[in-house]
Image 1 (cartoon, rainbow, N blue to C red):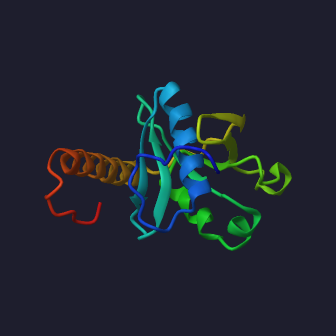
Image 2: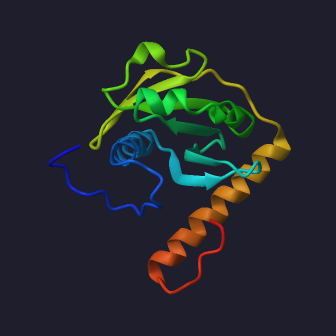
Image 3: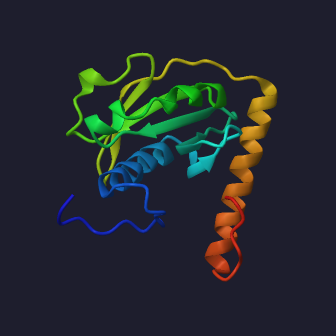
Length: 159
């Protein structure tokens, strides 16, 4: 997105600039809705969720960012995320046609400044043991990242 300020969050090189801006706008929306979020959270399967959002009641949502039509068509791994959340969303920029997005997931339209939920995700409660495992990964990742902000020389280990 030309002319926009560079995002503050660290990038690992896998995300396009569009995806980074969609993540920022989506996280702003989720924060307004009282969710806490982490990005690029490793799941039990070894896959990484783009955004994991935690509600005050321990409901967990995963938001998969799709920055283009090609991105959606090339990726089927998002189906695996259902087992690790209570609700699954896609977040897209306005350049991705809404009609091609899977209808069995929620849909968020986002840009660098904000987002809106176009379609609420259906709820599918995950198993208690999986919830505990995701919550622990979320907590550890958030704590490690916060530590790294105050002590940049600390060695990152798999968060």
